[in-house]
Amino acid sequence: MMSAAKRTAKGRQCYMQFQLLYNLWGGKRKTRFIWRPQRHLSSGCSTLTLENTFKCYELDKGPPTDVELSREDALKMYKQMVEVRRIEVTSGNLYKAKHIRGFCHLYIGQEAIAVGMCAVLRKKDSVITAYRAHGWSHLMGVPSLGLIGELVGVKGGCSRGKGGSMHMYSDNFYGGNGIVGAQVPLGAGIGLAHRFRGDGGVCITCYGDGAANQGQVHEAFNMAKLWCLPCIFVCENNHYGMGTHMERHAALTDFYMRGQYIPGLWVDGNQVLAVRSATQFAIDYVQKHGPIVLEMYTYRFEGHSMSDPGTSYRSRDEIKKVRSERDPIESFRKQIIALCLADEEELKKIDTAVRKEIDGVSKKVLADREVGMEELVADIYSKNMEPKIRGVSGYMLDHKRISEVCFGKPKRTPPEEINDVPVGDAALMAAQLEAKQKQDAKKVKEKPTKEGKPKAAGDVQKGAKPAGDGKKDAEKNNKPAAGEGGAKKSDKPPTAAPPAAAAPPAAAPPAAAAPAGATPPKGAGDKPKSGDKPKDGDTPKGDDQSKA
Image (cartoon, rainbow, N blue to C red):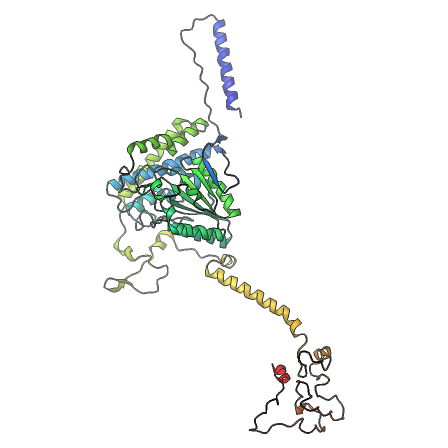
């Protein structure tokens, strides 16, 4: 393919040749020839150098500043950013028209963060975010019809209209969370699940600059670092915690340094290519070294929520200046045109198509209805064990499974996956079972060495001379060892045992073991009569050891 410089030189050369021929013909010029280089759209990858987009903390090196961008990726990311912006604008208009009630936090101005991060996410990666979740929900798989329908509260919503702004979920997307900072420890738990499964996935946990001061955030940092969890903690710093500027609510405004013992990275969150490059760097980092903190430096153009006009704690001039200088969509549009990946007309067509699509979705949502009253007690339990659900006046409501009608019956996990990938209590039980098996194997290994020389009845105590050969005793268990008082196979009577004071602690064998016809010495084989109490010292310690 001919480069842009060669095309420009060739066009200039053609113009000069045409001008020379015109002069040679002697004609009079009534018009002025103006040469303009023809712009050819590039179908390959273009390289762009990012400036002032990264700051590192406790990192040897940061993401690459020279990034490649193909035409396909450029148009895809641009369309996604325009879709998120248009969905949020439509949601704001529906809220003002009182079709949307309750909480509604718009993502206008922060689109580059969600689009740039989702551009490099893999299917096995997970995301959990705060209450400003509309853009993330759409990019993670919730269609615009289900998203806007859920905001309006109709049955066509992704949660049947019963969840609202912060209850939208999809595969590996764990929704928004209304409690400030509560999603951060949950994200650490999702990272722990990835670690248990060993699937190589990472968890992206988003929170705002206001939530960065929460104690549970730092507790999650500590656990993630101790356990080396694959977590990317993303602080979406839009300058304001509700209506309080970060200079007033944070003693340290460098939020990428808040991890202390966790490395951090500052990113220009309004540059989608910088976000994409930083996310790819973070994914590669956490798989080798553990968690990392990213600060996405951005700005929200609207108020904290729809109930906040957003101009009582900041001036309109401030908002206007940021819109003109740092709008993520406009800056990316200029980069696409400068790299000859698309022209102005093509981008305008995308804008028009997206606007038309979202307007059509809005009309469909407004024509839809809310769910019936019977769904108030639907899907309370995944497996209902009670015949009726308790209402105000007793157990009188019927439980229904609407989720199976809408989404189909849940698929069972294959047995091989359950066995190979234990999670939660199953993982703990598997670890305990494995430890017990190792302990039992160790005992079996040590048993022959300990029991290879069993103790006989006549074994002497420590320090005393053994009476017989232990090896022979081991080979012939039924044959008493020499010196135990037992007689060999002969007709001779056994030798009388020495006096008790001089006898070793080993006990004499029972009288039944003596050969028939042999007369034991006096008192050696006497048995105590019934009712007689044994005297102290009558039962030697050797007998107890042999019985044991």
